[in-house]
Length: 177
Image 1: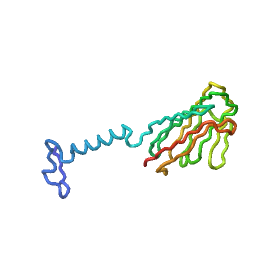
Image 2: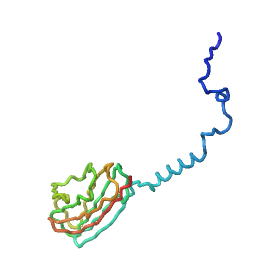
Image 3: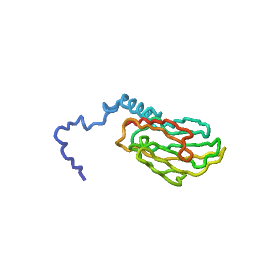
Image 4: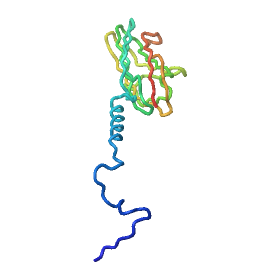
């Protein structure tokens, strides 16, 4: 049986059909170095990986510890952890979040779920009931940055006892594209 060869397409010469020896002109070590540098920068967090930022704020009746990213990329998921430690009894624990801190943010869940929720258009207030002296409560908020958001969100988180402010924390988050 004889092998049938079709003619090469126009513009293809015999030199194009020969296997190359040595490195190809398309396999540049520089391209590999640039790609490796970008991967290393991304994995190190230099490009906006959510690094939790912790701040502690104390008042006469309670201490508030806030953990949330200071820099994040648009579209990323993140957590905000609020720890409230009562140094004296809190009869009606309330946590107040400004609407400005959640601009273009989708809140996916809150644990534990508040007993009730209120909003006046400028802030969200969550009621949790009583917290005894020396007790602590952890409030976890899972959220995602909407893709349209670029820039910065900021606001003041407050812990209240029946509407009376106990401690507050200013927070800001820079959102990279």
